[in-house]
Image 1: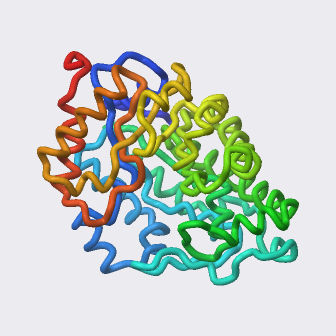
Image 2: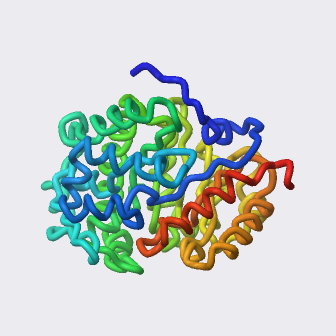
Image 3: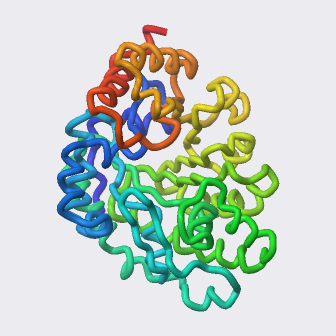
Length: 348
């Protein structure tokens, strides 16, 4: 696909470590649940209808660019389209979250999942990306994404959301060979899927390891990072890759060594500590507490400026430390975005 020129390329320049006049800003989960325009579509279409219909996915992806004014679009989709493509049933129950009614429990269960042909099973995502790129017409970059293999294993084994994923962890400790076989299948599928996203037009990729923080440092290396490393290695020459492993900040140095262009961090680590761990040659992304967007607007503006000062000049993408909450008022999200956009490095 022909790469079109991107008018606002702040995000891309920041990921390359180039000098910029200000910090770029976008928000995880910016396409969705807090926007009234999205809620109207949610009332008409089921979750997977919204994901699988390229026109709807395109409309939802563009909403925050038009309404909130962020510096990047992120594809509207879900990390669980990968287990679905691998042959697992995935239901998304509004207000309850994901349900995988036939989870993986034994080596025998691997017989009913497969590494699919992504051009067949996930083609609707690639069609959506092509449409989004056309509609964006170079206004801002488009971020594609996938879940990290460990986070996908958590859902595929536990069968539903959890705060601790004890069953998924027990599976890894009791059946390590089966766990590694499953993680490799997920990794192979994810690499093909992300290559397809880039071929369709994604400018940047983010790997979400939402549950990386549930593992000790050595277990994170064994069950997560060794697979993330394969993904980054396969894609980093094509586009910049951002790795976001929530809570796994003890491994920021090792994650920086993967060749990723950026690392997402949550609000439980100080920017300077993250910088010390990650080193000088990588872009950090984060780390505003999403719950803080429920504070009064003057407080949001004050805290956002404090965050920007803490990260300092350059090599930082302003973002939340996790996804935006559904009850955040749109004008509060705009206040966060506008404060970043109005803050120039000359102010430091």
